[in-house]
Image (cartoon, rainbow, N blue to C red):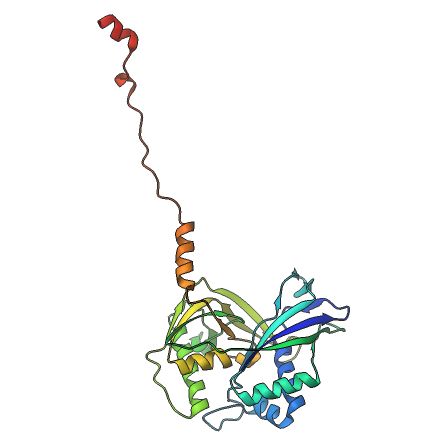
Length: 302
């Protein structure tokens, strides 16, 4: 189940820190805890997994970035000054159980608090709308609603390091497919062939470095990307990607995606054709002066 929330800013504070994903994630867990502490603890500490490794499971929820219409970037403060009173947010759960608990928790405590120095910025949920799932086919078109992140382990200066991949990297698609297959296995207990899963980049990716747990000993940076893309996969994998998130770190605010219109590619092709420079016209050179008839010479010859 996916919800679209409309929130209204309350109080006098109007400055939002740029790196707020960890606080949104903690808010989702707190909201679940309000409705069912045992389920929230299970999700945070264990999650859904096909093996017994503690803490290695998938949380199967994700959320978009906050949609703010009018704001000003405050670079030195790493913050946004909000001029809009209203913001929107999408929160998505693969588990119906989690979605129900989240709705119940919001009914009891509809306030979102995001720390910003001594005084947090406050939002109150005014409206919650359940979104209809798309009709999933083999090839679907999507746009990222929060950065998409995928990583692999690579040797660097004699050490095995985690490296975040750009969507243009040849390993990006296969790594994305492996992650999606692991989610399917954790959900169903069955394995799935990833040979037919294909990622097709449709726009220039925009990189974003996101700070998590900022100001704590657990602070870290994650590289993600915004882009438009096509995904070729079985419909059941599309549903997992749409509800639980695509790629890694979904419960930390990465990999939330939304469907693009079916005619998106035709529209982009038409736009590219309109923006393409007009073909150069051949330049006709004037005839040499000696070829131009001289009326006075012609009269004398007559």
